[in-house]
Image (cartoon, rainbow over all chains, first blue to last red; front, side, top):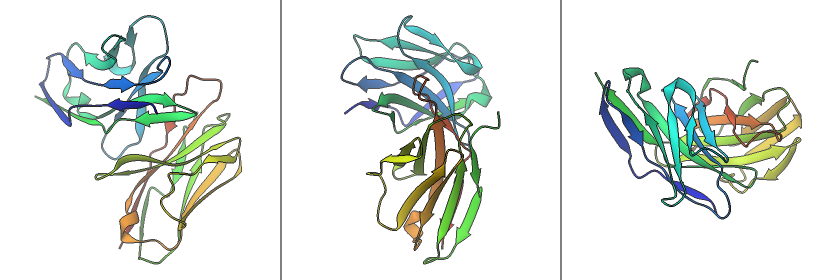
Length: 111
Length: 114
């Protein structure tokens, strides 16, 4: 079965600093990888995906993710964090017809 | 595009009552997914449909839960009878088979069973 792991329940970053939210994956075959963000009392919003090609994928709100095949990782990054980036972030992998989600990482940006 | 629409946004009911959650997927999307989110269990896939046909309902917790998709524009998730442990946020999501598997989520229904 396909799976993803998000090793950190919470990540704290000062506003203006770079941020990284970690994700590792375990798949058979080529992975399709995704990041979603969930703001309080809202549904999950699609941020970006990796299917093939360039290992650095750019997405919404200035986020990007780096696909690393040798480390089986797909970490979410942003060069300069904003307080408004505070939210719950989910990594996901294609699994049959749907997606398998990680447990989520709370990102807290401190002013 | 209006996105995925769910109703009601909030539902408070008493134990033993029937609850019906509704979802309208994005027009043209042929896959529809129902999820449940709780603090303890995180995000769980309950059931999904392709072209209105249920494909995998292995995530449905018990016979008290049922889901239907009578047409491409509408799906329901029913709980009968409801129990306090069913309290959660229920999400509907949809995607198009011609895409790369990204799903688009509705705003969710927050269910509280007292």
